[in-house]
Image (cartoon, rainbow, N blue to C red):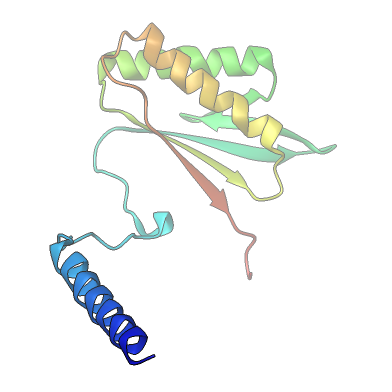
Length: 140
C-alpha cells in the first residue's frame, strides 16, 4: 500500500511540474481590445450618402446627392450609375447607406449589390467599402 501511495504522489508531482512548463511556453500576446462599430468615425474624404426614406403606403425611396429615386430596379440602376461616376472620379469615395430600423432589409440589401457593381464598373483595384447606419427613432 505504501508503494502505491508513493507512485500516486510521484504522478501528482509530475503533472504539476508539466502543467507549469506548458503554461510558461505559451507566448504572451498583446491583442487589441475590440471597439464597437458605432464608435468608429468614418474617414475624412469624399462620401456618397444614400438615405433610405420611408414614404406613403409602406414603401420607401432612396435619396442620394440631392435627388430622390424610387426603391425599385430602375431607381437602383440610376443610383448605380451615379455611384459609378463618383467612384471613377475618386476611387477612395466612401459609401454610406442610412436607413431607419423599421425599413425592411429587402429594400436596403440591393443597395449593397449596386455599390459592389459600381466599383466593378468603375474598374477599382480594391473592393468597395460600404458602411451601414441604422437610425434609431427620436427619443429612444
